[in-house]
Amino acid sequence: MDTPVDISAIRLETARLVLRPWKETDLADFYEYASVEGVGEMAGWRHHTSLDESRRILNSFIAEKNVFAVTDRKTGKVIGSLGLHPSWANREAAYAPLKIKELGYVLSRDYWGQGLMPEAVREVLRFCFEDLGLDGVSISHFRENRQSRRVIEKCGFRFIQNGEYYAGPLNKTFEDCRYLLLREEFRG
Ligand SMILES: CC(C)(COP(=O)(O)OP(=O)(O)OC[C@H]1O[C@@H](n2cnc3c(N)ncnc32)[C@H](O)[C@@H]1OP(=O)(O)O)[C@@H](O)C(=O)NCCC(=O)NCCS
Image (cartoon, rainbow, N blue to C red; front, side):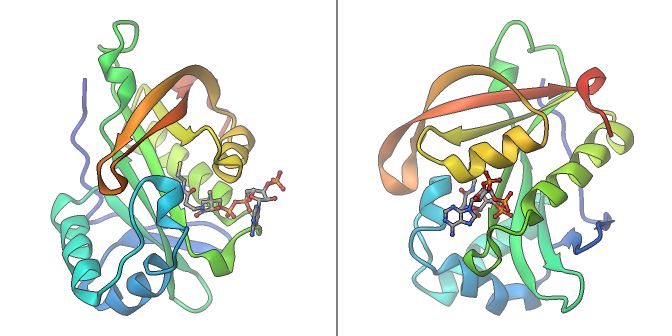
């Protein structure tokens, strides 16, 4: 079953990052990374082409209360996002009764390759299992997306199945690879 989440009063910290709710004043930082061609496309959305487009999406993050702003702990700059979404697993008979959320993330290209997203994901997993009491956390990547696959492997997810994902903004269907981590498999 899908589980409602509300991260609007949550702040998570790691050695190098702070994850917190989005604010309207994050617009410039959001547009800076979301307007880089080829970044959002790896996650199924088109890079932003105007501040208005970024503002509309930022406002949806604030309203839906399910996406963290990923910020650089030293500078406070917003360098990515990490969201908790409805999961494909809840459409599978085997997992339908479980409380599961699907993680989705993007990091500014300027910060790739430093292990930052695995660091964020590990803390969000702790939050999901220990604070939210979820039964499982799922995650998926497009088959060609090696970078996301590596994050998923490093965070200990278990491959479950291949599937298909229609990315509306790109009007394209991708083959995707789906993974799950159950609470009893999580080694905090
Ligand atoms: C996926 C993503 C969040 C990874 O974040 P990250 O903090 O860079 O993760 P890591 O530092 O662990 O790097 C992951 C892999 O990317 C590789 N990588 C790093 N920089 C790279 C670059 N510029 N080009 C290609 N690969 C790169 C690394 O080699 C690493 O693999 P390794 O652990 O085998 O060495 C980031 O690449 C991203 O935002 N991509 C675009 C959006 C996206 O794909 N979202 C996920 C949708 S499922």
